[in-house]
Each structure stands twice: as C-alpha cells, then as structure tokens.
Length: 392
Image (cartoon, rainbow, N blue to C red; front, side, top):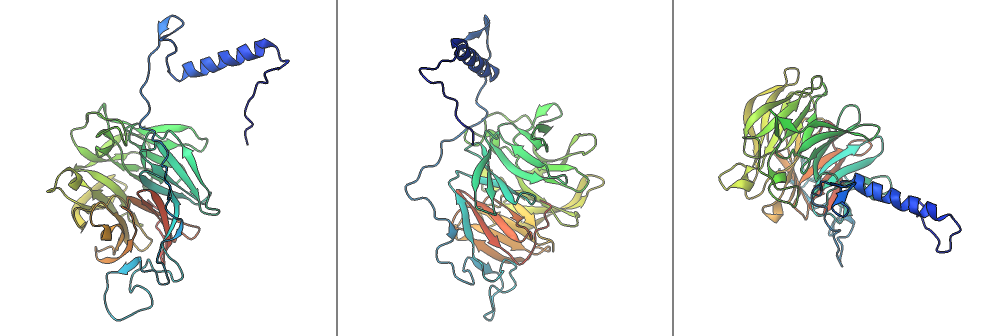
C-alpha cells in the first residue's frame, strides 16, 4: 500500500524542501501538455484534447446481484438446445451443458463491456469498458475486480499473441497496440497508405505471428466511445499486419461494418461478423466465413456462415477445439440476447440466454472450459462441456 505524502503544518524541515516539491509538481503538470497561465518559459504551450471519453463511475441504488442468475436451477433454464425431442438429461446436443452449473454474473458496474481475453498465467480476464475509457481485470481465483489501464484510448477488442502479450484495438487512438512484457506499448498499426485507420475493433493472431484486425467506423462516430472524426479510409476493411516486415495490407474490402473475428483451431477458416445493419435496414447482420491461407496471408471463397435475427446483431465470435462457433447476440429481441453456438457447418446447436445485450466472449479457466461473456454492464461466466481453442 502506498503511503500518502503529507507535510505537517509545524514541520521542522527546511522551507526549501517544500518549494522543491511544488516546483517538481509544476514540472510534472507541464510534462502532460497542460497549459499553465497560457505560457511556459515565455512560449505559448500547446494544449491537447483528452485522450477519449473518461466516463463517470456508474452509480446505482440497486446494483445487479452477483452469482447465479435469478431462477437458476440444475439444469439451468438459461441454456436452450436447438434440438427438440424426447426429454433428456440437460439440453440435448448442446455443449454448453456441463451438469451442476449455471450462468453466473461475476462482475458488474460497467457502461459497455467488450473485448474479453483470458490470461492463463495469471488466471485473469481483461476486458474493455469502452465509454469509461478503461481496461478492467477480473481475477477468477478470488473474484477480485480492478482497473488494469485507464485511460485505455477507449479500447475495444483485446487478444493475446503466442508470446503472451496483450494486443488491443483502440478507438480514440485509432490504432492497434501491443503491450510488451515489460509494460511498454508498441504501436502495431495506425495508418494505411499514409492515412489514419478508422477505429480498429477486434483482432486475432495466427501461429506465424501475423495480426489480423477489423476497422469499422464506430469509434469515430461520436465522443462517447472515441473521438468524433471524419474517416480517412475509403472503405471499412479487414487488415493483416505482416509479422516480419510490419507491413499493413487489406485482406477483405467489401464489408459494411466488419466487427468481431476469429480463426478456426486448424487455422483454415476465418470468421468475421458484419454488423452493417447498424447503418441501415438493408445492410447485413451476419457472420461470414473465408478459407484462410495463413502462409500467403490471404483469404478466399467468402460465404455467409450464419444470419442473425434482425434487428439483432452479432458483435463477437470464438471457436472451441472441435471447430464449433460461439457468437454473441444482442440489440434486438430481448429473448435472443446472449450467446449462440453453431457447428462448423453452420447448424445452430443452442443458445445461452443472458439478461442483457451481449457484445463479446472468450474461453478461459484452467481447463479452457469456462466461457466469459461481456453483457453490457456486466461480465458473465458459465462452465461448458467443451474447451475453447484459445486462438481468439
């Protein structure tokens, strides 16, 4: 615990110490770029805009309760199988069923929870609270919740590379960054063809170290989840960053609003959500799948993998070790809020019902069988009968 610095009123310390302290404080303020009396050393100092919205904490007289959701019993009614038939022990054919378990709310108090990623070495989940301009950390061993980084440049999607480093998509930074093992931050991509990116949204890392990310325009549409600005890119693309040269290339350029993405466990498929419906009723709300050539850094044979029930959209997607696809659902019918699970061929297996709009999800836990779900103001978790591919 850091002990606060105090200066007693009747201190016997020389007055120089106090003056030195005040001068040091002034220098620290100046270093942040804040103007003091309009000028420093006779030269007008440049002021800088805040690094994105930093929201006020959410206050509530009746906070959402933690623990199993109300009405939970074994088997949990929040799990719904798409296969109807004779009564079975638990939801038939739905791999979310793990026996004596229920959907739990493990943390709450956020404005818009997004982009979860699990760090096995520390047994914690990092996720973004975009409007509050912070990355949160939930420790699963003792349930401790804390702020990992603030400001976070209105971070959205997070993932982890094969060396255990955090990869983050930043709205107000309009960039993709990597947090090094020593805590320093490296800018991976912030421009394409000399022009700023829109607002990177989500990212994945393939085994060769290449970083693939989506770049819709949500983060520059206003001041709530980023900084309002005009787009500089002609389109909203999916990009790949070469692991050796660092070159940024477009791999897909025909999305309306590319959003969450994931790769199959064999790295032969790339899944990308298109949430273009947010821009107009005739635009898509679906997941597309591509054949993926990791070595060549290319995709081909695009097709629609799964359509979402409009006006709902799917924002995030992950795969398990058997190639099943798990995706978020929200913004539409409240009865559809939650998570959907599909086979690799696109057959719907079942749904996990969550009482809030769901943005994104990831697998975690020591056995990779715990699904963490970012649902608007809260973080949810449920044990499954499968393991996540751990290749976000």
